[in-house]
Every structure is written in structure tokens, then in C-alpha cells.
Length: 254
Image 1 (tube, one colour):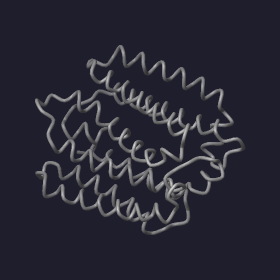
Image 2: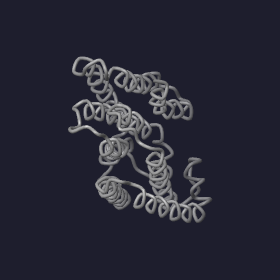
Image 3: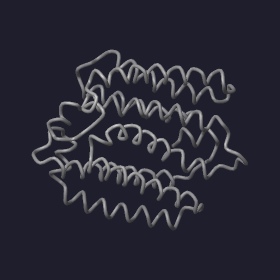
């Protein structure tokens, strides 16, 4: 969110960042609790096994933290539109979760792109409503599209990494629907589109956006290099991909 905050100088206060953190934790935990319940045996991955082992405690915390976040949002957010739109996005995320649980194979193509789109939409929401600009500039949306490309690549790539454990645990992903070769072909196409689009932004936008373009380009390059290297150490790959999304913190130095 800092990426888009600094991009249009929205100057968000810390409470907005806190609310986003609470919302993300609730979505993440809810998703993993659903997976933990769906898996009929001991989960193959640590994160799912952790949610199985602490299912009741995490469910209680999910209810408490979700309630606290909602109360804080109702009382502290100054703009009603962000609350309404945020609740609407939350309802859509819940609907997609339900569809994926009801018929995971049929809606598997929806999983990765919806995760990427809602993730980026979520971090753009507060900067969009809290800025003092008369009109949102085009570079806000163009960099949003670039961010979706990176997030989409990330979710498909993680699905490939988790293919074997997902199959053992009865979970679903694009990699299991189209197979690993098909997923890697999609990733190669997406890689070319992602890098081409981001590089084109240097020509389309003025120099004031170059720092933001460079940050998103480095994130994309990290994903591309890790993917092309083909490392078999899945934990190391996941850590590198996760770490790349911390790069917008560099904006704190500017």
C-alpha cells in the first residue's frame, strides 16, 4: 500500500495500515482454516498442518480480530465509500472462496487471477480514496496493472511449487488443472507480457514515476530470474518471492 500511497501522495495514517494488516491476516487465516478442514488427513505442508493443529484457537482469534477490525473501520475511517467498497470486495472474496471449495476444478482458472486482482485492489483502495487529487492520474492505474502482472505470476508460480503437496492434500490449483508443462508455458507467456508492459511504462510515463516503475521492475525480475533458474529448493524460492514484495519499503528512504 505504501507503493501507491507515495505514488499519489495520499499521506495515509498508520491506522489505515493497521486495518489493512488485520484484513489480510483474517483473509489468509480464513483461507487456510478452510483448507485445513478440507484436508482429511495430516497436511503435507507446515502452514496447513499448523492451522489443523490450532484450528479452534485460530478460529476464535479470527472472529475476535475480524470484529475488532470492523469496529475500528466503522469508527475511524473518515470516508464511507472506502468502507462500502472494502466490504463489497470482502464479500466478493468470500464468494470466490466458496466457489473454489464447492467446485475447485471448474473454477481453478479463477483462483490465481482473483487472488492477484483482489490483492492489488486491496492495497490501492485507501490511496485512491484518501488522495487530494481532483482526478486519479493514469499512471496510478498503469502501475496497478503492472502490480497485478507480478502478483498473478507469483500465484501461478507458487501453485507449480505446491503442485505435489496440493495433490496429496486434495487441494486444487491451475497447475493441477492444466499440468506443470501447461503452467510453465503460461508463466513464460506471462513473463514476456509482464516485462514488456513494465518496460513500456518508461516510455509512457514521465520521469517522476521512474522510481516506482523501477521498484516494480525489480520485483518482476526477481520472479523471472528465480523461475528461469529452476531451483529445486522450494522453501528458498518461496522466501525470495515473498521478500520481493518488501521492496516498496525502499520508498521510506526517499
